[in-house]
Image 1 (cartoon, helix red, strand yellow):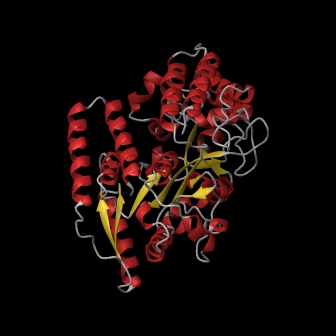
Image 2 (cartoon, rainbow, N blue to C red):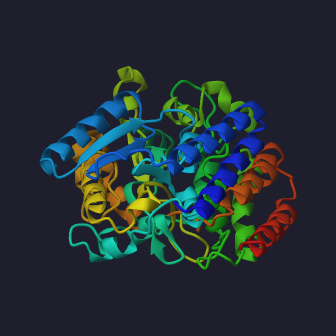
Length: 446
C-alpha cells in the first residue's frame, strides 16, 4: 500500500472511533498505526510467498466448521499454498482496519456488501475483475446477478461472494388452515397490498393457546430498503450518484410500512423485545407471518418443540414492488483480497479454491444450479426449495456507495426508528431531508 493510501485508511479508522466517542481507543489506535507504519517501513521480513492469512469473524462452532474446510483446501493444494485462519470474533472491522493501516493486512478477509465500495475507494482491497472474468471454474456468469452486484463498484469486482441470504416470507400454515385464511403461493407473485390484507385477516385472531396474534412483526427488520423498494423506488440509483430516496415511488413504498404500524398489524416497537427478539414472535405463534432470511432455522426450532406446540411452516416469496418488479433484499458476504496481492495468480487460486469450498458449507451458495445442495446442508429446508430457488433469482442488495454508512445512519435513526415509535411521523419530509443530505455527501466526493 502506498503512503497516500495508508493515510486514507488511517483517517477512515480514526473517523470510526470518533463516531463511537471512544478517545482512549482512538489514542491507542493512533499509536498502533504509527508503529505499524514505522515497522513496515523498516522492512520487516515477510512471510512465505505461498502462505496466506485469511481473517474471519467466525467463532465457536462456525469457526470449527470453517477450520475443517480450510484444512481440506490446504490438503488438496498439496503444498502449492497454505491458508492460515485468523479468527477475529469481536470488533472485527475495527481490527481489520487497524491491520490495514499498520500495513499488516490479512491476505484474504470477509466483508459484508455495504463496505466493499468504501474499502475499494480507500485502495485497501484488490480489483479481481480480470481474474474473475478469465476463470473457467468461477466467473461472473456463475453468480446470481443481484448477488454479484454486491461485490461490484464502478464496474469492477472487488470480492468473491460466498454466501447468499435473501429474504422470503415464512408463515404459519397450521394457523392459516385453522383460521380458514388462504395461503400465498410458494412462487407466484403477490403484492404488498395483498400481504397487508392477509395481515389484517390474521390480526386480532387467537392462536391455539388463546393468545391474540398479529399479522406480522416489524421492528427495524426487515430493513428500510425493503419498504422503499416496495413502491418501485430506491435509495441510490445504479450509477452510484443519483439519489432516488425522495421520488414518489420511494415515498409510496414507505407508506406500506406506515400502514402496518398505524393499523397495529405488528406489535409495538417497544413491545417486541418482551419475548426476546422478533423471530420469537413467530416461533411462539404470536404472529402469522415473518419476513426472514432463507438461513433462518425455524424448521429446526419447531422440530425441537413439544409435539403440542409444533406447527407446519409455509413459504412464500417477498411481495413484488408496485411496478411489478420482484426484489428480495439479500444479505451477502464476500471474501476480499488485500491490495498488495492484486494480480497475484497463486493468491487468486487460493481465494477461488476457498470460495468454491464455502459453496458446499452454507445456505445458500450464491451461484446458479446449486439450490439442491440446500437440502443436503440443511435437510429440514427441503420443503422450502421451490421458494428458495425463486427467491435467489430475485436477490439483490442496495446500490452501496462509499458514503453509505453516513446515509444509512440517517435512514435508521431519523426515519425508521422515528416511524416505528410514532405512526403519524412525517416520513415524507424526512426522506426529502435525507435525500438532500445524501446529495451533499456525494457532491464532496473526490
